[in-house]
Each structure stands twice: as C-alpha cells, then as structure tokens.
Length: 340
Image (cartoon, rainbow, N blue to C red; front, side):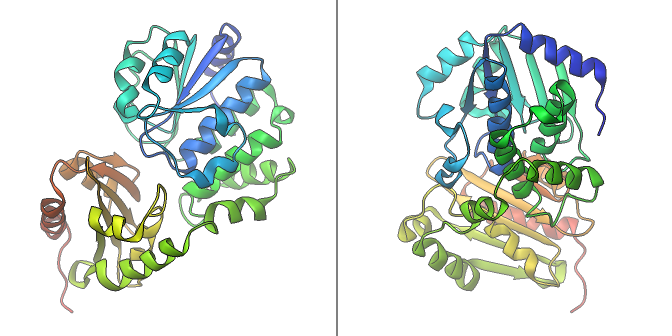
C-alpha cells in the first residue's frame, strides 16, 4: 500500500525534530486504540524518542500483555502526569480517533498544545483543523493497519520488529472481529501476513484477548442473552441493555462487556444490534449492523455518536431508561417494519 510521500516526509521530519512524543487515543480504548498507539510508541522508542501513550480512560487489563503497556498514562487516574506529558511534548500523535473531543478529559490540553499534531485514523469526517499531517482512510481495516503502512513507508518493512508487530496485529485482529468484517481489501491480509513473519505468536495473542474472562463474565453473558436481550423481529433489530446494578451484581471489571454486542447479530434475522451500558457517570451505546443500515449516520443523528458504517458508538445524552425508549422509537422510524 502506497501512501502520500509528501505526508510521509512531513511526519518523518516532525519525528526527527522531536524529543518527546505523546501518543493519544480515544475514550474507552479498544484493541485498535491500544494496538495502534503502542505500536507507534514502539516505533518512536526505536528512534530514540521519549514516547508515552495517553488514554483518557482505563483500558481492559487483559491488554497489558502488549509491549510497552507500562508507558500508558490514564487521564482520569493520572491527570497531573498526563498534563505534564502533553506540556513536554514536541509532537502529539493522535491515533484511532477523528476528533479531539474523543480524547475526553485530555481534549482541552490537546487542542491548546502548541506542539505539532499528526493523525493516523480510519474514521469518517476527521477534524483536521490545526493538524500538521493527516493520514486518514475510511476504507482501511483499522488504525493499526494504517499505522503499519505509515511505519513501513517511513523506515522500511524491516524496521518493524516483534514488539511493533504484536501491537499492530492485535489492533487489526480486534477491529476486524478476527477478520470477519472491515476486511474486504487485500491490504489487510498483506499487513497481517507481514506482521506474522516478525515472529509473533498468533495463537498466544488470540488467547490473551479472547480466553481471559472470569467465571462471573461467562455467567453474565448467559444472563445477557437470557434476560437482557430484546428482539424486534419486525424491524430486524435486537438490543441488550445492561444497568449499573446488573454490572455490580456480577462484579464486572473493565472490558468484561466488550464484544457482547456482536451476539445480537448472530441471529440470522437480525441486521442491527445495539448494546446499552449504564454507569454512574454516563450511558454508553455500541451499534453494529451486518447489511445496508448505516449505524454511523444513525448514531450521529440521534445520539451524538459516530464511528463506522457497520460499527459505531455513542455516549447517550439521556438517562438509561430514556435511552432505551429513544433507541426503539428512532429505529422504528428508520427501519420499515415487515410483516411476520
């Protein structure tokens, strides 16, 4: 995959001129956020830079197997250290986000930073104001894949080592659902194949991501499917709504609800799936689709969210009960009921 050479040269020059690089990703970081940010962190360390990864909120601890995860600072837990890192940065590298507001509690300092800013992302409609260089491609599988091609073009394929490969492969794998969606282009398989040749253990990576849940989480999954799953067959939609009380009952930890939304689409007659998750501070939503319905547009229109055509998220402007009611109302307006 060939990227704009002028942009590559621009980013290479910014890196060469920098001593401290702050790599920033989005709230509620997923595998791609971690894979792309830690992959770029490894690339910067290899250049002799002082690099750190700044995340607005905590990540699931099962991603701590990724190299350099000890360089992660969390905005909600370590605000002073994050502020110091941003203030000291000669370069701010944003990955897997299309707007600064997605950096949550870090957003104000990121926007006000006088350091040059670069973006590596695959979400639609990126906010490029004030950015020195932008790599954005909505057709690519993940920010981790795009980061791989950026590093390869800057420094050559041999520059990518096992640490980088472990991170970037993890991001690609998780953001494609283990190569089940967002992977219709040859480039993602070229990238994955090249990364596999770096000596990573794909079985161990998969095991570390998908086979690390507690008994409570497994029992919670059963509860979701038996008690919390709501199916609206006439509009080919299903949703799971999890209250804060439900989460406390099962003793869930960060990451325990990741990917549960995908079970809604495992039913053959369901095309749109949603998960609603209540917390003491907010109500989060995850949207998925498997045919033509654009959940990115839907999330933006009704819940101030966004993401991708078939996978998006939002922080609801409503409380938990209202969110559920509004979701059903808006989807009935958008999806034409069919005779059963």
